[in-house]
Amino acid sequence: MSALFHCPYRQSLLLQHALAPDKMRIAFLLGAGCPVSIRMPADVGTNPLIPDIRGLTDLVNSRLGQSEQLGASYKALLDRFHGGAPENPTIEDILSHLRALQDVVREGTIDGLNKTSLAAIDKEICEITTSVVGVPLPNSITPYHRLATWIGGIHRAHAIEVFTPNYDLLIEQALEEHKVPYFDGFIGSRQAFFDLTSMENETLPARWARLWKLHGSVNWWRTATDDVVRRDGHSQGDRQMIYPSHLKYDQSRRMPYLAMLDRLREFLTRGQAVLVTCGYSFADQHLNEIILHGLRSNPTAICFGLLFGPRSGYSDALAKARRHPNLSLLARDGAILGTVERDWRPDEQTGHPLHGLSVTKPEGTAGSPESENNCEFLLGDFKHFGNFLAQQHSRSEEEPVIASVS
Image (cartoon, rainbow, N blue to C red; front, side):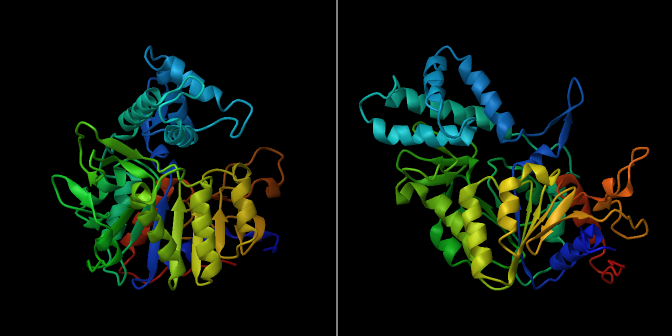
């Protein structure tokens, strides 16, 4: 096969082999695309279990725009983005700006917005977000459950670490339903409290997974006494800790987020490490900075970025991969491997054990040349990645797959 193509079968095997050793340090970064892959019946077709950031933004904009109490104030807040960057702000951009204003407005007003109205908008955004993302997994065979089964299925020398910027509780539900113990930085039951010392000096067994919520969670609260707790409900004066903003926060208020980010930084910079991202678009520049710094400082670390859809939707991520040889980006229509970007090969290997699981070839159109009908890589879809992990788990006690990858 010409060197002008990458081989999706070979990359599937490399990923499989990277995840197989029980002594390898392995972590997953699950982005907003993961719950989107779980489809729920709707009046017409299906809807994602939880919408992506753009879908969530549209929903918040609609509900707050129609609010009698907050509609005018919310419009004034959005008007501040006109003519500036970003042109089409997401809910996280809006929260960042909103919280920056709260820090500087004091007892005055900015464009008619005062501290009371800003705090009310912040609270309403968090409540809408909680109602949208606080849904349970629909059954016991979702990709989250498959990941949980994979995590709990092999005794390892190092704990599996799961990082996510998502606010939902889906991975927690899956781990608990499959009886996989995990540590998330909080200690306790009725009102679990954040304990930095336990994170820094942990001595838990490796069979305990580590779960790090990089942007907070719908069940994190900062109390009126400035304690950070994890619990289902909230009390008077509590503030929900969704999205850190990274702006205008003093050290104590940012501490849970900084501690979680430090875990990602530490994971990548210490020894051989494999980070697999799924559902993550590399649009969060703060997370990107940590990932890329870790890859630059530790040549023995590698990141497999599993991208949903074609490469055309990830121009910024592709530019980064062209400069970092240990960042491999694998999209549906091609990949960047070792800084080299190519399409997937056109010839399929129907006898390959991973054919149909991680690689497929779409039906060609009549009269189209073979080069326009290349193989497609499936693992950027969390649903397919879950099936990939399930297949690997079923072979965990068998000999590794041996197949031609020429």
